[in-house]
Length: 408
Ligand SMILES: Cc1cc2nc3c(=O)[nH]c(=O)nc-3n(C[C@H](O)[C@H](O)[C@H](O)COP(=O)(O)O)c2cc1C
Image (tube, rainbow, N blue to C red; front, side, top):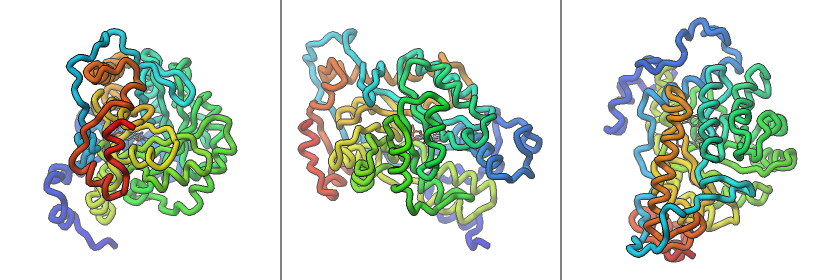
Protein backbone atom coordinates (compact mmCIF):
# COMPACT_ATOMS: atom_id res chain seq x y z
CA UNK A 1 0.00 0.00 0.00
CA UNK A 2 1.16 3.50 -0.74
CA UNK A 3 1.38 5.89 2.16
CA UNK A 4 0.47 9.07 0.30
CA UNK A 5 -3.20 9.93 0.04
CA UNK A 6 -4.81 12.17 -2.56
CA UNK A 7 -5.08 14.81 0.14
CA UNK A 8 -1.32 14.60 0.76
CA UNK A 9 -0.73 15.09 -2.90
CA UNK A 10 -2.92 18.18 -2.99
CA UNK A 11 -1.11 19.64 0.00
CA UNK A 12 2.37 18.89 -1.31
CA UNK A 13 1.87 19.93 -4.92
CA UNK A 14 3.04 23.00 -6.79
CA UNK A 15 0.40 25.75 -6.58
CA UNK A 16 0.29 26.22 -10.37
CA UNK A 17 -0.85 22.63 -10.73
CA UNK A 18 -3.75 22.89 -8.31
CA UNK A 19 -6.24 23.00 -11.11
CA UNK A 20 -5.30 19.58 -12.38
CA UNK A 21 -5.96 17.45 -9.30
CA UNK A 22 -9.69 17.66 -9.72
CA UNK A 23 -9.25 15.16 -12.55
CA UNK A 24 -10.98 11.93 -11.65
CA UNK A 25 -12.25 10.36 -14.85
CA UNK A 26 -10.15 9.81 -17.88
CA UNK A 27 -12.63 10.74 -20.52
CA UNK A 28 -14.28 14.08 -20.00
CA UNK A 29 -15.45 16.88 -22.20
CA UNK A 30 -16.38 16.58 -25.84
CA UNK A 31 -12.99 15.44 -27.04
CA UNK A 32 -13.46 11.82 -25.97
CA UNK A 33 -12.12 9.47 -28.60
CA UNK A 34 -12.98 6.13 -27.04
CA UNK A 35 -16.71 6.19 -27.01
CA UNK A 36 -17.20 2.98 -25.10
CA UNK A 37 -14.25 1.70 -23.16
CA UNK A 38 -16.02 -1.27 -21.64
CA UNK A 39 -16.74 -2.98 -24.93
CA UNK A 40 -14.07 -2.11 -27.45
CA UNK A 41 -13.82 -4.52 -30.34
CA UNK A 42 -10.05 -4.48 -29.82
CA UNK A 43 -10.21 -5.48 -26.16
CA UNK A 44 -12.44 -5.10 -23.13
CA UNK A 45 -11.82 -3.55 -19.74
CA UNK A 46 -11.14 -7.09 -18.55
CA UNK A 47 -8.64 -7.74 -21.31
CA UNK A 48 -5.39 -7.10 -19.50
CA UNK A 49 -3.02 -8.61 -22.07
CA UNK A 50 0.07 -6.49 -22.67
CA UNK A 51 -0.97 -5.79 -26.26
CA UNK A 52 -4.39 -4.58 -25.15
CA UNK A 53 -2.87 -2.33 -22.47
CA UNK A 54 -0.44 -0.85 -24.98
CA UNK A 55 -3.27 -0.05 -27.42
CA UNK A 56 -5.41 1.51 -24.72
CA UNK A 57 -2.47 3.53 -23.40
CA UNK A 58 -1.95 5.14 -26.80
CA UNK A 59 -5.48 6.49 -26.80
CA UNK A 60 -5.25 7.57 -23.18
CA UNK A 61 -2.09 9.55 -23.96
CA UNK A 62 -3.81 11.41 -26.76
CA UNK A 63 -6.88 12.16 -24.67
CA UNK A 64 -4.88 13.36 -21.71
CA UNK A 65 -2.73 15.58 -23.97
CA UNK A 66 -5.90 17.15 -25.38
CA UNK A 67 -8.01 17.40 -22.24
CA UNK A 68 -5.47 18.28 -19.57
CA UNK A 69 -2.73 20.80 -19.00
CA UNK A 70 0.39 18.69 -19.54
CA UNK A 71 2.98 21.28 -20.47
CA UNK A 72 6.15 21.79 -18.43
CA UNK A 73 6.18 24.67 -15.99
CA UNK A 74 9.87 25.26 -16.74
CA UNK A 75 10.89 26.71 -20.07
CA UNK A 76 13.05 25.56 -22.94
CA UNK A 77 15.54 28.37 -22.17
CA UNK A 78 15.03 29.75 -25.68
CA UNK A 79 13.85 32.95 -23.96
CA UNK A 80 17.48 33.43 -22.87
CA UNK A 81 18.56 33.74 -26.50
CA UNK A 82 18.07 36.84 -28.59
CA UNK A 83 19.07 37.64 -32.13
CA UNK A 84 20.73 40.95 -32.91
CA UNK A 85 18.24 42.83 -35.04
CA UNK A 86 19.49 43.75 -38.51
CA UNK A 87 17.80 46.96 -39.72
CA UNK A 88 19.50 46.58 -43.10
CA UNK A 89 18.93 42.96 -44.00
CA UNK A 90 19.59 43.63 -47.74
CA UNK A 91 17.69 40.51 -48.77
CA UNK A 92 14.27 39.89 -50.32
CA UNK A 93 12.00 38.10 -47.82
CA UNK A 94 10.19 36.38 -50.70
CA UNK A 95 13.46 34.82 -51.86
CA UNK A 96 14.35 33.25 -48.52
CA UNK A 97 15.14 29.57 -49.02
CA UNK A 98 14.08 27.20 -46.24
CA UNK A 99 15.33 24.08 -48.02
CA UNK A 100 17.25 21.82 -45.68
CA UNK A 101 19.56 18.85 -45.95
CA UNK A 102 17.92 16.44 -43.50
CA UNK A 103 20.24 13.48 -42.88
CA UNK A 104 21.20 13.49 -46.55
CA UNK A 105 17.63 13.94 -47.76
CA UNK A 106 15.90 17.05 -49.02
CA UNK A 107 13.28 18.73 -46.84
CA UNK A 108 11.42 21.91 -47.81
CA UNK A 109 12.09 23.38 -44.38
CA UNK A 110 13.93 22.48 -41.15
CA UNK A 111 10.73 21.45 -39.37
CA UNK A 112 9.87 17.88 -38.40
CA UNK A 113 6.46 16.56 -37.40
CA UNK A 114 7.61 14.72 -34.28
CA UNK A 115 6.62 11.14 -33.45
CA UNK A 116 3.18 10.87 -31.94
CA UNK A 117 1.01 7.97 -32.77
CA UNK A 118 -0.12 4.75 -34.48
CA UNK A 119 -0.80 1.32 -33.01
CA UNK A 120 -4.52 1.68 -32.22
CA UNK A 121 -7.14 1.52 -34.99
CA UNK A 122 -8.36 4.99 -34.03
CA UNK A 123 -4.93 6.49 -34.73
CA UNK A 124 -4.93 5.74 -38.46
CA UNK A 125 -6.83 8.91 -39.37
CA UNK A 126 -4.62 11.00 -37.13
CA UNK A 127 -1.50 9.74 -38.87
CA UNK A 128 -3.16 10.23 -42.26
CA UNK A 129 -3.82 13.92 -41.53
CA UNK A 130 -0.32 14.51 -40.21
CA UNK A 131 1.27 12.72 -43.16
CA UNK A 132 -0.85 14.50 -45.79
CA UNK A 133 0.21 17.82 -44.25
CA UNK A 134 3.86 16.69 -44.29
CA UNK A 135 3.57 15.79 -47.96
CA UNK A 136 1.81 19.04 -48.83
CA UNK A 137 4.61 21.09 -47.26
CA UNK A 138 7.55 18.74 -47.98
CA UNK A 139 8.38 18.23 -44.30
CA UNK A 140 9.89 15.17 -42.57
CA UNK A 141 7.54 13.17 -40.35
CA UNK A 142 8.02 10.65 -37.55
CA UNK A 143 5.58 7.99 -36.38
CA UNK A 144 4.90 6.73 -32.84
CA UNK A 145 6.40 3.53 -31.46
CA UNK A 146 5.80 0.68 -33.93
CA UNK A 147 6.48 -2.30 -31.70
CA UNK A 148 2.81 -3.15 -31.21
CA UNK A 149 2.25 -3.28 -34.96
CA UNK A 150 5.25 -5.51 -35.62
CA UNK A 151 3.85 -7.92 -33.05
CA UNK A 152 0.27 -7.58 -34.28
CA UNK A 153 0.23 -7.01 -38.06
CA UNK A 154 -3.48 -6.08 -37.98
CA UNK A 155 -2.33 -2.70 -36.64
CA UNK A 156 0.27 -2.09 -39.36
CA UNK A 157 -2.07 0.06 -41.46
CA UNK A 158 -2.13 2.70 -38.71
CA UNK A 159 1.53 3.27 -39.62
CA UNK A 160 1.68 2.37 -43.33
CA UNK A 161 -0.85 5.14 -43.96
CA UNK A 162 2.01 7.56 -43.26
CA UNK A 163 4.13 6.41 -46.19
CA UNK A 164 1.04 6.09 -48.39
CA UNK A 165 0.04 9.68 -47.63
CA UNK A 166 3.57 11.06 -47.69
CA UNK A 167 5.41 9.27 -50.49
CA UNK A 168 8.06 11.92 -51.13
CA UNK A 169 9.20 13.22 -47.74
CA UNK A 170 11.67 11.78 -45.20
CA UNK A 171 9.77 9.35 -42.96
CA UNK A 172 11.16 8.33 -39.57
CA UNK A 173 10.38 4.91 -38.05
CA UNK A 174 10.23 4.58 -34.26
CA UNK A 175 11.01 1.85 -31.73
CA UNK A 176 12.27 1.57 -28.14
CA UNK A 177 15.89 0.85 -27.23
CA UNK A 178 15.21 -2.74 -26.23
CA UNK A 179 13.17 -3.62 -29.33
CA UNK A 180 16.20 -4.97 -31.19
CA UNK A 181 14.36 -7.76 -32.98
CA UNK A 182 11.68 -5.55 -34.47
CA UNK A 183 13.96 -2.83 -35.87
CA UNK A 184 14.34 -4.04 -39.49
CA UNK A 185 10.60 -4.76 -39.74
CA UNK A 186 9.68 -1.34 -38.35
CA UNK A 187 11.80 0.32 -41.04
CA UNK A 188 10.43 -1.90 -43.79
CA UNK A 189 6.81 -1.46 -42.65
CA UNK A 190 6.76 2.23 -43.59
CA UNK A 191 9.66 2.24 -46.06
CA UNK A 192 11.39 4.59 -43.61
CA UNK A 193 14.40 6.71 -44.49
CA UNK A 194 15.59 7.02 -40.89
CA UNK A 195 15.03 4.98 -37.72
CA UNK A 196 14.50 6.78 -34.40
CA UNK A 197 15.05 4.92 -31.13
CA UNK A 198 13.10 6.57 -28.34
CA UNK A 199 14.35 6.92 -24.76
CA UNK A 200 11.80 7.68 -22.04
CA UNK A 201 13.14 6.65 -18.61
CA UNK A 202 11.29 9.50 -16.87
CA UNK A 203 7.94 8.43 -18.30
CA UNK A 204 8.57 4.77 -17.41
CA UNK A 205 9.50 5.78 -13.83
CA UNK A 206 6.17 7.56 -13.35
CA UNK A 207 3.99 5.22 -15.41
CA UNK A 208 1.98 2.90 -13.15
CA UNK A 209 3.06 -0.12 -15.23
CA UNK A 210 6.46 1.34 -16.26
CA UNK A 211 9.54 -0.73 -17.08
CA UNK A 212 12.51 0.73 -15.20
CA UNK A 213 15.24 -1.75 -16.09
CA UNK A 214 17.43 -0.05 -18.66
CA UNK A 215 20.50 -2.23 -18.23
CA UNK A 216 21.94 -3.05 -21.66
CA UNK A 217 20.07 -0.28 -23.51
CA UNK A 218 23.23 1.14 -25.11
CA UNK A 219 24.28 -2.32 -26.25
CA UNK A 220 20.83 -2.82 -27.78
CA UNK A 221 21.12 0.50 -29.59
CA UNK A 222 24.48 -0.64 -31.00
CA UNK A 223 22.82 -3.87 -32.23
CA UNK A 224 19.98 -1.93 -33.83
CA UNK A 225 22.48 0.31 -35.66
CA UNK A 226 24.09 -2.87 -37.05
CA UNK A 227 20.80 -4.46 -38.01
CA UNK A 228 19.28 -1.77 -40.23
CA UNK A 229 20.48 -0.13 -43.42
CA UNK A 230 19.12 3.36 -42.70
CA UNK A 231 20.66 6.05 -40.48
CA UNK A 232 19.74 5.66 -36.80
CA UNK A 233 18.95 8.59 -34.53
CA UNK A 234 18.04 8.52 -30.85
CA UNK A 235 15.28 10.69 -29.46
CA UNK A 236 14.32 11.67 -25.94
CA UNK A 237 10.69 12.44 -25.34
CA UNK A 238 10.79 15.48 -23.06
CA UNK A 239 13.72 15.20 -20.63
CA UNK A 240 16.65 16.03 -22.92
CA UNK A 241 19.99 14.47 -23.91
CA UNK A 242 23.19 15.34 -22.04
CA UNK A 243 26.77 15.66 -23.38
CA UNK A 244 27.72 12.34 -21.86
CA UNK A 245 24.74 10.44 -23.30
CA UNK A 246 25.34 12.03 -26.71
CA UNK A 247 28.99 10.92 -26.67
CA UNK A 248 28.05 7.35 -25.80
CA UNK A 249 25.47 7.31 -28.59
CA UNK A 250 27.98 8.67 -31.10
CA UNK A 251 30.42 5.93 -30.13
CA UNK A 252 27.94 3.19 -31.09
CA UNK A 253 27.24 4.64 -34.53
CA UNK A 254 24.13 6.76 -34.02
CA UNK A 255 24.20 9.65 -36.52
CA UNK A 256 21.98 12.17 -34.77
CA UNK A 257 19.85 12.92 -31.76
CA UNK A 258 16.50 14.55 -31.30
CA UNK A 259 17.06 16.13 -27.90
CA UNK A 260 13.39 16.07 -26.86
CA UNK A 261 14.13 18.51 -24.05
CA UNK A 262 12.23 20.16 -21.20
CA UNK A 263 9.89 23.03 -21.93
CA UNK A 264 7.07 21.37 -23.84
CA UNK A 265 4.94 18.31 -23.16
CA UNK A 266 5.73 16.77 -19.76
CA UNK A 267 5.49 12.99 -19.85
CA UNK A 268 5.74 12.89 -16.07
CA UNK A 269 2.67 15.13 -16.30
CA UNK A 270 0.83 12.82 -18.70
CA UNK A 271 1.55 9.79 -16.52
CA UNK A 272 0.47 11.76 -13.45
CA UNK A 273 -3.06 11.83 -14.87
CA UNK A 274 -2.98 8.11 -15.65
CA UNK A 275 -1.74 7.35 -12.13
CA UNK A 276 -4.54 9.52 -10.69
CA UNK A 277 -7.09 7.55 -12.64
CA UNK A 278 -5.68 4.26 -11.40
CA UNK A 279 -5.62 5.54 -7.80
CA UNK A 280 -1.87 5.02 -7.73
CA UNK A 281 -1.16 7.82 -5.26
CA UNK A 282 2.58 7.23 -5.05
CA UNK A 283 3.05 7.46 -8.82
CA UNK A 284 0.77 10.48 -8.99
CA UNK A 285 2.84 12.23 -6.34
CA UNK A 286 6.03 11.35 -8.22
CA UNK A 287 4.49 12.73 -11.41
CA UNK A 288 4.08 16.10 -9.69
CA UNK A 289 7.55 15.98 -8.18
CA UNK A 290 9.27 15.19 -11.49
CA UNK A 291 6.92 17.18 -13.75
CA UNK A 292 9.76 19.45 -14.93
CA UNK A 293 12.67 17.04 -14.63
CA UNK A 294 15.34 17.14 -17.28
CA UNK A 295 17.44 19.35 -19.53
CA UNK A 296 15.76 22.31 -21.20
CA UNK A 297 15.73 22.02 -24.98
CA UNK A 298 18.07 24.93 -25.81
CA UNK A 299 20.61 23.78 -23.23
CA UNK A 300 20.42 20.19 -24.43
CA UNK A 301 21.07 21.26 -28.05
CA UNK A 302 24.21 23.09 -26.89
CA UNK A 303 25.38 20.19 -24.71
CA UNK A 304 25.14 17.73 -27.60
CA UNK A 305 26.80 20.05 -30.13
CA UNK A 306 29.58 20.91 -27.68
CA UNK A 307 30.55 17.29 -27.17
CA UNK A 308 29.85 15.49 -30.47
CA UNK A 309 29.62 15.83 -34.23
CA UNK A 310 26.06 14.50 -34.20
CA UNK A 311 23.28 16.14 -36.18
CA UNK A 312 20.72 17.57 -33.78
CA UNK A 313 16.96 17.96 -33.96
CA UNK A 314 15.57 20.38 -31.37
CA UNK A 315 12.23 19.09 -30.10
CA UNK A 316 10.45 19.85 -26.82
CA UNK A 317 8.51 23.07 -26.38
CA UNK A 318 9.08 24.44 -29.88
CA UNK A 319 6.05 26.72 -30.05
CA UNK A 320 6.92 29.31 -32.71
CA UNK A 321 8.96 29.92 -35.83
CA UNK A 322 11.23 32.11 -33.73
CA UNK A 323 11.99 29.10 -31.50
CA UNK A 324 12.98 27.18 -34.63
CA UNK A 325 15.22 30.03 -35.79
CA UNK A 326 16.94 30.10 -32.40
CA UNK A 327 17.50 26.34 -32.46
CA UNK A 328 19.06 26.61 -35.92
CA UNK A 329 21.21 29.54 -34.76
CA UNK A 330 22.58 27.28 -32.01
CA UNK A 331 23.55 24.76 -34.69
CA UNK A 332 20.58 22.37 -34.82
CA UNK A 333 19.76 20.80 -38.19
CA UNK A 334 16.02 21.11 -37.66
CA UNK A 335 13.36 21.51 -34.97
CA UNK A 336 10.47 19.17 -34.17
CA UNK A 337 6.91 19.85 -33.08
CA UNK A 338 4.43 17.39 -31.53
CA UNK A 339 1.75 18.70 -29.14
CA UNK A 340 0.85 21.89 -31.09
CA UNK A 341 -0.33 19.69 -34.01
CA UNK A 342 -2.34 17.19 -32.02
CA UNK A 343 -5.69 18.94 -31.76
CA UNK A 344 -5.85 19.65 -35.49
CA UNK A 345 -4.76 16.11 -36.33
CA UNK A 346 -7.38 14.53 -34.03
CA UNK A 347 -10.36 16.83 -34.57
CA UNK A 348 -9.53 18.77 -37.72
CA UNK A 349 -8.38 18.08 -41.25
CA UNK A 350 -4.97 17.83 -42.87
CA UNK A 351 -5.52 21.40 -44.03
CA UNK A 352 -5.83 22.50 -40.38
CA UNK A 353 -2.48 20.82 -39.70
CA UNK A 354 -1.01 22.60 -42.75
CA UNK A 355 -2.25 25.98 -41.46
CA UNK A 356 -0.62 25.39 -38.08
CA UNK A 357 2.65 24.33 -39.68
CA UNK A 358 2.59 27.38 -41.96
CA UNK A 359 2.39 29.58 -38.86
CA UNK A 360 5.71 28.08 -37.74
CA UNK A 361 7.26 28.47 -41.19
CA UNK A 362 6.20 32.10 -41.51
CA UNK A 363 7.69 32.93 -38.08
CA UNK A 364 10.94 31.26 -39.12
CA UNK A 365 10.97 33.24 -42.36
CA UNK A 366 10.45 36.56 -40.56
CA UNK A 367 13.28 35.74 -38.11
CA UNK A 368 15.53 34.93 -41.08
CA UNK A 369 14.57 38.17 -42.80
CA UNK A 370 15.29 40.28 -39.70
CA UNK A 371 18.71 38.67 -39.30
CA UNK A 372 19.59 38.94 -43.00
CA UNK A 373 19.62 35.14 -43.44
CA UNK A 374 18.84 34.06 -46.98
CA UNK A 375 19.47 30.38 -46.33
CA UNK A 376 18.87 28.17 -43.31
CA UNK A 377 22.65 27.65 -42.85
CA UNK A 378 23.17 31.41 -42.53
CA UNK A 379 21.42 31.40 -39.16
CA UNK A 380 24.15 29.37 -37.47
CA UNK A 381 26.76 32.13 -37.92
CA UNK A 382 24.61 34.97 -36.55
CA UNK A 383 25.63 36.75 -33.40
CA UNK A 384 23.39 35.98 -30.41
CA UNK A 385 22.75 37.62 -27.08
CA UNK A 386 22.67 34.97 -24.36
CA UNK A 387 21.52 35.66 -20.84
CA UNK A 388 19.89 34.35 -17.68
CA UNK A 389 19.69 30.72 -16.71
CA UNK A 390 21.10 29.54 -20.02
CA UNK A 391 24.40 31.37 -19.48
CA UNK A 392 24.54 30.26 -15.83
CA UNK A 393 23.95 26.66 -16.88
CA UNK A 394 26.56 26.77 -19.64
CA UNK A 395 29.11 28.26 -17.24
CA UNK A 396 28.33 25.63 -14.66
CA UNK A 397 28.84 22.91 -17.28
CA UNK A 398 32.10 24.44 -18.54
CA UNK A 399 30.71 25.19 -22.02
CA UNK A 400 32.13 28.33 -23.69
CA UNK A 401 28.99 30.46 -23.97
CA UNK A 402 30.86 33.32 -25.65
CA UNK A 403 31.77 31.01 -28.52
CA UNK A 404 28.06 30.16 -28.84
CA UNK A 405 27.13 33.86 -28.74
CA UNK A 406 29.61 34.76 -31.48
CA UNK A 407 28.13 32.08 -33.72
CA UNK A 408 31.38 30.09 -33.99
C1 LIG B 1 0.27 12.34 -27.97
C2 LIG B 1 1.75 12.16 -28.08
C3 LIG B 1 2.27 10.89 -28.30
C4 LIG B 1 3.65 10.68 -28.40
N1 LIG B 1 4.12 9.42 -28.68
C5 LIG B 1 5.45 9.24 -28.92
C6 LIG B 1 5.96 7.97 -29.34
O1 LIG B 1 5.21 7.00 -29.52
N2 LIG B 1 7.30 7.85 -29.57
C7 LIG B 1 8.16 8.91 -29.39
O2 LIG B 1 9.36 8.77 -29.64
N3 LIG B 1 7.70 10.12 -28.96
C8 LIG B 1 6.39 10.31 -28.73
N4 LIG B 1 5.92 11.54 -28.34
C9 LIG B 1 6.90 12.59 -27.94
C10 LIG B 1 7.10 13.66 -29.00
O3 LIG B 1 7.71 13.11 -30.16
C11 LIG B 1 7.98 14.83 -28.48
O4 LIG B 1 9.28 14.38 -28.24
C12 LIG B 1 7.46 15.45 -27.19
O5 LIG B 1 6.04 15.47 -27.14
C13 LIG B 1 7.97 16.89 -27.02
O6 LIG B 1 7.51 17.73 -28.05
P1 LIG B 1 6.32 18.82 -27.83
O7 LIG B 1 6.71 19.64 -26.65
O8 LIG B 1 6.29 19.61 -29.11
O9 LIG B 1 5.07 18.04 -27.59
C14 LIG B 1 4.54 11.78 -28.25
C15 LIG B 1 4.02 13.07 -28.05
C16 LIG B 1 2.64 13.27 -27.96
C17 LIG B 1 2.12 14.67 -27.73
